[in-house]
Image (cartoon, rainbow, N blue to C red; front, side, top):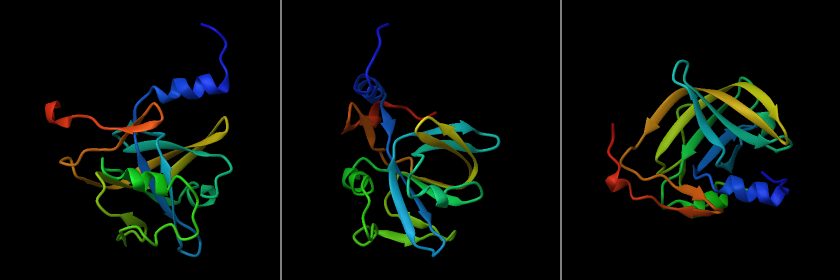
Length: 166
């Protein structure tokens, strides 16, 4: 194996297909915030844990620290525009987005494949990112919907008709 550049590493990481999520949280003034994340992974069934990562200096870090709640939205195949919308910072992120206030008080974006209401249990430093480990408190799943996939720096689809559920 040869030495590599940061660009080589980025291209290598892009070869790994991943789902696309939007994380929503609220600040101390109860204002909603959201960000697109593809670094999402399951950790444990018992207790129910997930992890995702966020740049260390992200504006959202204060609102996803230990003990804070957030809502993870698994995006549906047709929600590419939504993924791009939350990939950049905007003044009023939710002005043109179909959403509602969930029972938890968190902002819930409509029409997603799955929703995980979570509470952060630990934050670990991982290079230039923080790894957020969170306990799943509530779950809503729509298995009939197809998830949005990201690979090789673009959105792709999969033919789920040939994949059998277990």
